[in-house]
Amino acid sequence: MKLILLSIGMLAIGFAGIAVKILFKKNGKFAGTCASNNPMLNEEGAPCGFCGAKPDEMCQKED
Image 1 (tube, rainbow, N blue to C red):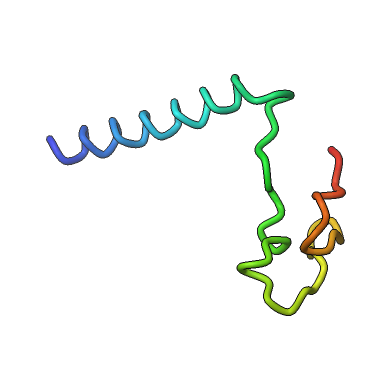
Image 2: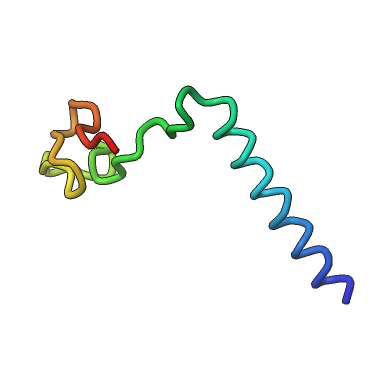
């Protein structure tokens, strides 16, 4: 029972941390959301599969 409560508590702390980050970010957006645009992950220089940006460009997808 203690393990379940500890797990739920840790998840709650994680969700609260993400919520605080969203509240303090401008327009609630996370920076660097294009993971495939990261030059360390994408060594071939292929464009982002989500927005089409090249590794040296910012994410072009606006919601």
